Length: 334
Image (cartoon, rainbow, N blue to C red):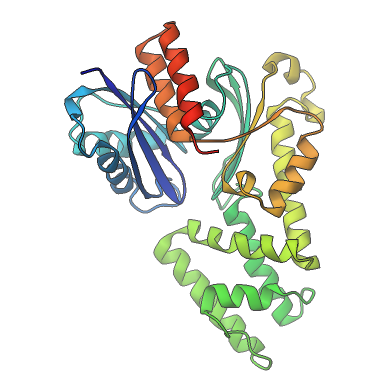
């Protein structure tokens, strides 16, 4: 029996794992909760659960290597190695940036850039399948501009501003109240009471489930924007503007960085994260702006991209590794 390789993509809301053969055939898949060390209380537990799911029915002694794509790779090494040991695997996995596996899961090109907008948001320049420059990815408190958490915070704030008169009237009052408190929560004469209830529950949910919970409100504001609500449209337009700014930095188009384009090389711009790969209003705005300047590629399976890196590491320079990489991209979700 041949060797097996593990690929893991640990995001803010979910962790995906694949186990593959050296020819690029997927032998197992696992799924668990988020593994972002900033916004998830116990990332190691979710990494272990995803690993165990993917390894079910497989001989763990055949596992010859693995790559974990995680936010904050240096900080994430300890939980990744702990999950690996607790899953009964020998050796230790390589831990790389989650943006890198998003890139390698979408293209076998060695160079390019990637823009991610999911629970968090980050842009990166990739050269020879290594991240050589980043923009944003600073976490929910200091950055992640245009992310699901960023959108969720602003959706809740816009609703509260409308309730107390600091902001324009918006359907986000009713929509956010329904998402946070349940159907029928927004009444006609309970503005102060509604505001207090929203504040209490939002803070309680963030304390209990982490800041990633705010990302559950992103679809609320995106849907309202698609339906024409002006406040929601403004929030989504600002998110798109900030994401495009991040992309311009890592593709070398920022005004202060004109020399980086030549230094960074060409290659595709991979759009990753649910906010950019699903048919959202935000994705429409970002694609319309960035598509004029770059070849856009939609992300596929980042866990498969991590597995491709594991195979390439085991078979450096071997044409079989390149073939396995292409096979894994072909099996990734469209």
